[in-house]
Length: 299
Image (tube, rainbow, N blue to C red; front, side, top):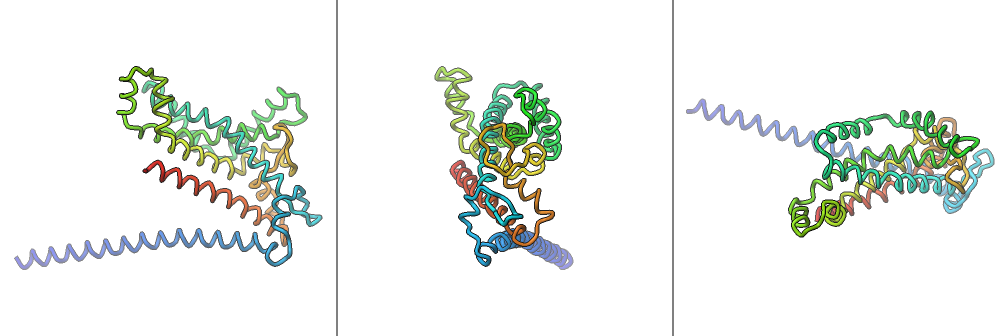
């Protein structure tokens, strides 16, 4: 009996020790994540706000100025903000309906044989590196736009919209599928029992019930489009001017940072960090919107 009690105590002590060690490892991991985030935010904001706090540059002129000429000490990013917003909105107009309809089709309409083909294809689409999307756009989308619209070059806002729409599809489809699947079956059965057709049930019951999850998918898609860099560099044309047409070349915020950070120094480099601050604020707003939508969906 004494030996059994001793063994039991020893086992309990080991379990307690392992649980204590595990909890400390988890806590340290969480602290590392938070500290890393704070360090990144602190460094980017310190470098990005230095010209405005210590060198006398106007943050308002930085935001509304249309000329980006570092050699002449002119730093205005309004054209890049407009380009980023237009590219994101255009890609949403193209990608969101396709993504939502695809999710509805896979969950509510498609037979298993079709699901087994389309679902893995969507997962594969999500795993393709961004630069390959850019190469596809440069080799296929850009020449098609150039030939169909008879343009001197096809690198344009339209090309960016099309490629970004393709890139955001996996995110929108996957999250929308989860939202649609989470709608209680009783809603669907009740609608059908009242005489509604399958299509009426989808558009008047299922999609409205999954609205918060679908909106979260759209917000995530916006984040993907707004933060994309490598693919956009290859197909945007990289002209820092405000676009007046969808066939004009553009330079979004992320592209500006990637193109010039390699050789920038001094104030020029700090202004690129300031561009990153503006981009960070956009992403922060999107994350806040996503949290609000998610909390409403949970309620």
